[in-house]
Length: 629
Image (cartoon, rainbow, N blue to C red):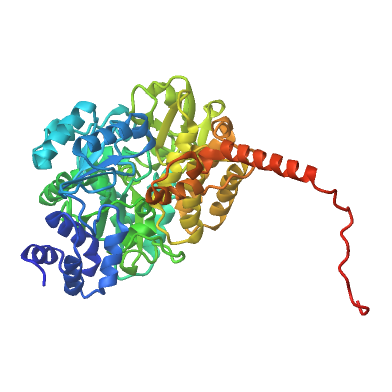
């Protein structure tokens, strides 16, 4: 039996099974977790098997099927947060609250753990406190946070300046300096009509800004021409790539351009419905975005009969719940339908069989905003910017060892060195060009250009100066992918875990060249056999670092031969506790010298004994045999 609160949630979502994820998110907000009784009530109300509801609840990092504490503190564990000291801050908070990382306190009050990148790399270290973003952590804030938790002060009553998120726009160009009024791009598109608009998009050469760079005109035409009862537009705002935060800024300060772009896409493909899939880490934006959508409906810029021109299009916002894989378009659609976000087998592709099995176009936030700009300025204007194969501008999220982390808009073709200089990078040894999933460039490659034909990027530029240990960067990336793999295919599920274990083995000074060879082999295997882009890109940066920064790995080798990763001495620790022994003889690794001395002593005794005995024959006498042998 559903509780009154759950009944209201179910009613608000029309008891639609495709709204399962949204229902679970809201139900958890009521109780702090999802007990079996709640899952059973949801399953019964939606007419779904309990296993289906349990599967969805268990898939997402931000959903809890066990009590997680009244206060749930998640430290962003991107490499840039680590560089800013997030681990020391997390341990300090745990010490003050008398708990272990990853555990719930004995009184059930609080849990402290890590999460993947929260999209605040320009103002970290950051945490999520009951889903709310806190930036620029300091030891002083940690002290006060512990005090507030012990006093049970609600997170909403914590100091408001803690929750302040800045845009940090450092360089503006065509998009960030557009100067257009809300709805201006939509009016221009309506004037051009669907055919004229698609022609302008084609002339512009606009390619997807999420990283893949697929031609927007091809995607839109394919979707428009596909048969279906309905067509859909999805704005992919699930930017989970470590080091990326450009979409966060567009949603916060350029939302009308994004909405105009969605409406324009809807007009082009014949859709009347759109969805914004907003990553769970950006939940703090939800109320603001919902308010603006309501205002646009009142202004005739969204909903029925937009601008009185006979075109109707409306938008819903759906929240993610902590799953990097949902940035992949088919996994996103699965999540939008209330299921675990696992990539679909393709073909068919979303443009013909997407949301609800209908033709669907999935576009990045930046792509849609640029489409709105093209509707006003025209395809030729846009095509004149950038390079012939990479037209227009690109938003870059720059973080790491730079004086001015933030958002930089450059025309395509800018060199990596120019980006570093603009952000105030000094003594830079390495740059990752696409977060954890792209290439890592060494200093002799900084003359290369940001463009699809050279250094392709979804927008994440992380900078590392000469003081950084590139091995630790690789290790952080390996653990990120091991955590975020959806487990659908064996190469990715097993390969990402193997990579993490191999790098942990090296970090523990038990590595050998064999382990480095295994990392290289795993790179080749995963790129050729993984089901989706996660597995195919999970080892690119690691492989680059291994090739370009080999000394950082070699200095961790303790043997030139194979060394087992299993620590037998550690495995015997429980036996030592049970027997009350902790002397040298009860250890393996720490007692090697004693064992060597004991063997030498035993050998000397054997030699002394054999010296006094008769010399044996070199030929062993044959045993007596019968005549038939």
